[in-house]
Length: 91
Image (tube, rainbow, N blue to C red; front, side, top):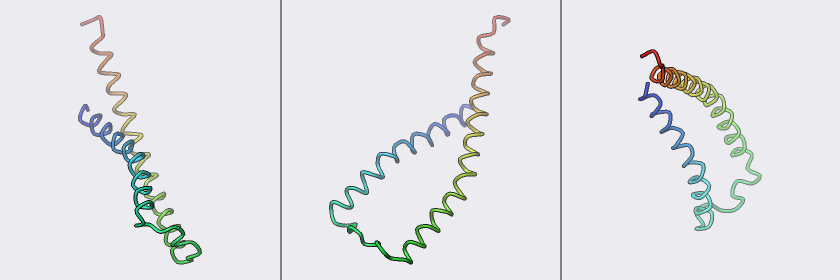
């Protein structure tokens, strides 16, 4: 069970770092000229592609996030149960 807790903690750490790194990466790409301002503005095909990708990501990641939440609850319950057993005065 500790392995699952460590794995879940690792996922959360990666997500936390990604929240800060991705915007900084986008700013760096824009400031260096790799990304051009308004390159896809008014492009109907790119708009369709980005909307489709967003919908597919939402459809795929929502079940994944629910699964991770359920794993987190199982790990938390096991952790609490293990802690309470160690604190039991009957031992």
